[in-house]
Each structure stands twice: as C-alpha cells, then as structure tokens.
Image (cartoon, rainbow, N blue to C red; front, side):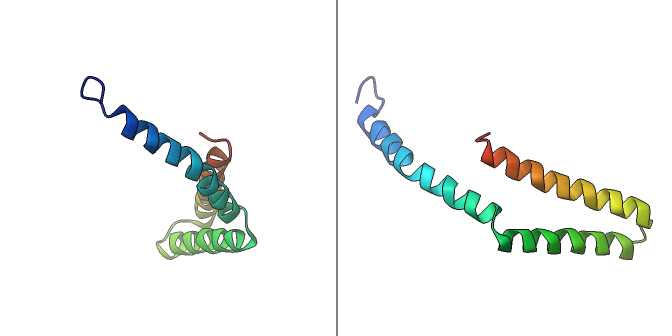
Length: 84
C-alpha cells in the first residue's frame, strides 16, 4: 500500500475487469442484435404506439412519437456497439 492507496488490490481489480468486461460486452451485443431482441423491440414500440392512441394522442403525432422512440432505442444500442 503506497501512500495509503491499495495499489496491489486496485491492480488485481483492474486485471479482473479486463478479463471479464469483453465477455460481458459481447453477451450484451448478442442480446441487442438477436432475433428475439428485434421481436421484443417491435412489441415495445407497438405497445408504446397503442398506449399513445388510447391516451388520446392524434394518430400522426403518435406515429412520430413511436418513430422517435424506436430511434432512441437504436441510438442507445449503437452507442453500446461503438463502446461509448
């Protein structure tokens, strides 16, 4: 421990993270881009659109809001794939 900083423990923690993080990211990417993920995304957007209509949102606005929702989901998954 140098200057009260547990450097050995920090180093060991970083080594473990470097070992496990790539596997976690790969698993996440597989989940985001699977057929099941696409199916779930479609259900989520469809549900969102339906709820908007049932809440009295005009159809043209609900369509735009559903598109924006889908684009937001796509942007989030793109950020994961780019490592941001």
